[in-house]
Length: 263
Image 1 (spheres, rainbow, N blue to C red):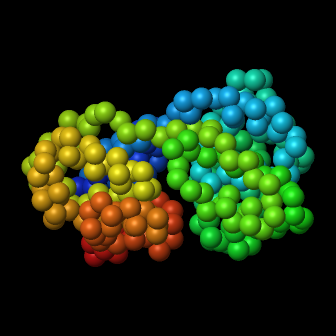
Image 2 (image 1 turned 90 degrees about the vertical axis):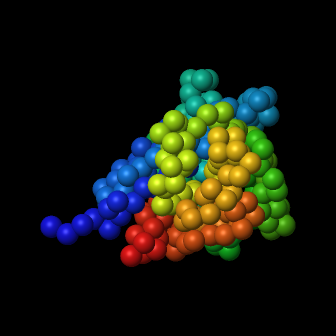
Image 3 (image 1 turned 60 degrees about the horizontal axis):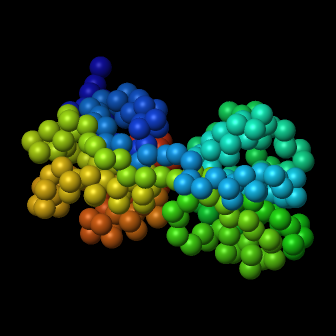
């Protein structure tokens, strides 16, 4: 039996702590040794009032558009706190998703999305979104600290009434696992994989904290792989380079990109 494609490769995964295991399995099965670098902490936003107000009026919306699994998780969590579920609104409100994982998260609640774009990116959603009339009301649950939201902006230009509401917040963790810190200092890491712009920025904060002011030169021989265009923009901004971007913007696509890159 031949070697696995990622044999002897030491790879750092930078996901939220509770989300690392499924990606870890994907890469480990191809022979990689994985080091965790949780670069996101996900929780409710600082103030739940805007979210609660939107949920009080949830029946006024024609659509809810989810651009992340966390948007689904924390909207559902808040509804559950109130003895409700998104399932209560299936068939009354239409659901749209951006991204394969987001679609799977909705399916796990027993809900089929009414609209999934042909490609798992915001631009594809906007190009194909079935807005049947202007003045349609759309709820867009999102991260608290996000910047401008292209989906909200473009849908408003198309005549929709869009309520953006913070349903979760992502923060930078305070710590790095000891074995990951040691592997980085020993110079044995081959690659770091990034799944979002936030994981790029937060990883940089943690790398500087644990490796010191020379952290950039200490990782100059490590290959940096990204899940998609926005993550690559962040990576270029922080590290001035991207080794390879996934062609398919999923973790399976990221795995393929990593295997192809090292082969």
